[in-house]
Image 1 (cartoon, rainbow, N blue to C red):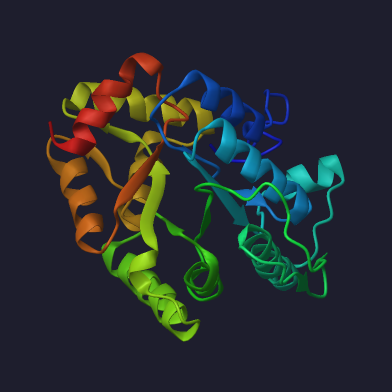
Image 2: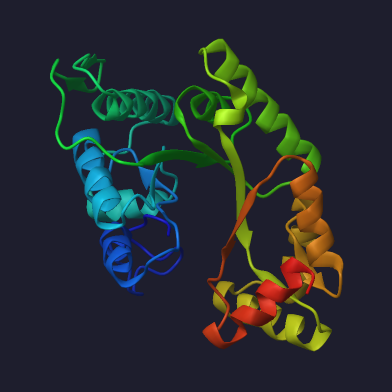
Length: 274
């Protein structure tokens, strides 16, 4: 789930605290993995994120991944009054928050001292069982670097396979520089779910996206083609996902924001090539 306090483009629609939703889902499910993709760094102090993370790790019996990013939806910061410094500062804060949380998760009492955050030299309790960190975004340099240095998972917002592989390579190079093995990092992607095996079903979902966004179906399709978002009907969606897999992607998060729950199987079958 994304961590937003507003629905993009419509502040009048409900927007929940999805970390609490994920905690509720942890108690209602047994096997599904639960992922926060991702929390803006200025929403919560890293101590709060760490404590929420270890608590979700406990109630889910090790099925939770905590995400961290710089934030990007200007309106939610303006309306709620969250601090929203410039992008470079937010990147610096995100890196420190990742370092802080890594220090809190580690065995030992190393602590952390940065410009924005400080953790005393003690070992916070409880220690997590299987808490993982994900870094996600669209950047070409800074985000891959943060993922390579600190993340268990790097979520690259869907793009062409060539661009995807280049960002992954940047992350892996950063991992090696930081003394980590690149194979410690799982690569994933996320993108809007607009696909079906039958063209009529695809057009229905595409029109739902158009109604939701106020953008014409033709413009949506043009944008998706340019950005190489897996979409369409017939074999095309599965082929586009397979191209991302060949570029290193191991998990694809589908954003079902315009899909009726009754259409989920239709969409999933198209991406899986069933």
